[in-house]
Length: 108
Image 1: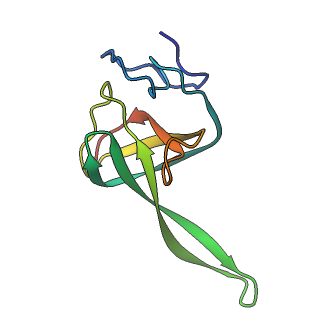
Image 2: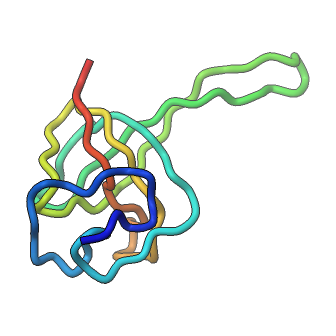
């Protein structure tokens, strides 16, 4: 059991999912993002909403923007709506999914 090359502890549960970064064959690389779970589409797909600041050059100010990212959730992760999770970039798993959930937190 590996930590998938990240500084996060592996989950306590094990799974047989081949798309799990801890127990499967998916390697993580690139971006690591944090956001709140908005919806769980089916058993293995979650929608993450993240907020960020965008600079407007003309006025030299920032505005708040939001974006949604689809991510694969392995069965060993226990996530529900409202939780804050960390996702990592991986190879494209489907048309819209290029991220996997690597750490589950709790809602505030």
